[in-house]
Amino acid sequence: MVKSTFSHTIWEWAEERGIEHKFIQPESPYQNGYVEPSSKSYREEVLDVFSFTRIKEANALLQVWAWVFNSERLHKSLKYQPPKTFAQQRLRSSAPSSLLPD
Image (cartoon, rainbow, N blue to C red; front, side, top):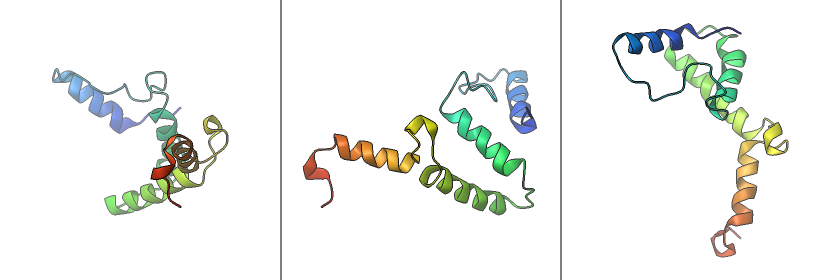
């Protein structure tokens, strides 16, 4: 597994200065099973594949990747549905009918 040099550098920098961490350790899926899988996917599918020369390029690709990840990609943990579809179904099944669109 390739470790993110940036995240480890920040972690070490904060520790050297006695700054208390309020976040999980870098690349620690056992501490947060919700964020780390998407972070790993983003790193493997975008950061490890593309080389950016501008922040705007990285941001634009992040926006596209996030849209696909949330709107089109099937997630096993959501019964093979995209998160957007899963959330919409949960909302419909739990919201009072007066709040749902016609």
